[in-house]
Length: 89
Image 1: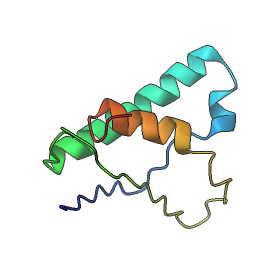
Image 2: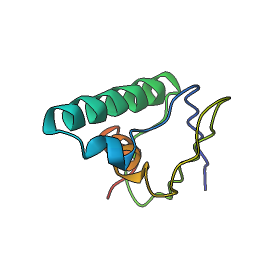
Image 3: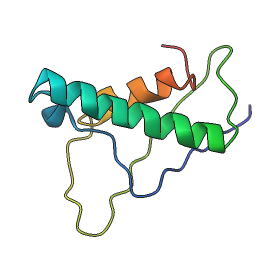
């Protein structure tokens, strides 16, 4: 099985509590995440998923970033990877 690693420096997906604020804010944050993942996936020349693929998302906190719940980033992060075609849900 081929392993693809998509590394996006100085980025973290929008947190769930950020997405719960307002509809307009949710749309803006999710769009930002989709564009970021799509751009880096295109730059890395990652092929789109054609079948079953295992996906894992590792978020590395930078200096001065606060920790957050494990599932707080999953909604926006996984939606962005699905939009980029990195997996089928």
